[in-house]
Length: 39
Image 1 (cartoon, rainbow, N blue to C red):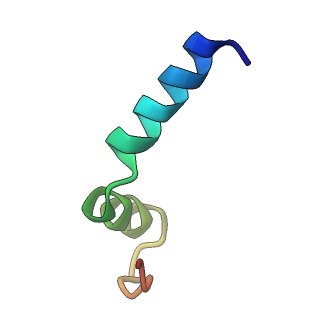
Image 2 (image 1 turned 90 degrees about the vertical axis):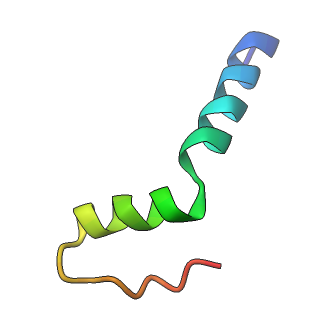
């Protein structure tokens, strides 16, 4: 993995895996489930 690819991967992770957006994503993937116990 080049330095550039690594930087992009880190940016994507920090942008999309915030708790609220992760919760929303999981709710879309698993309709009817809301208790994912995200720390």
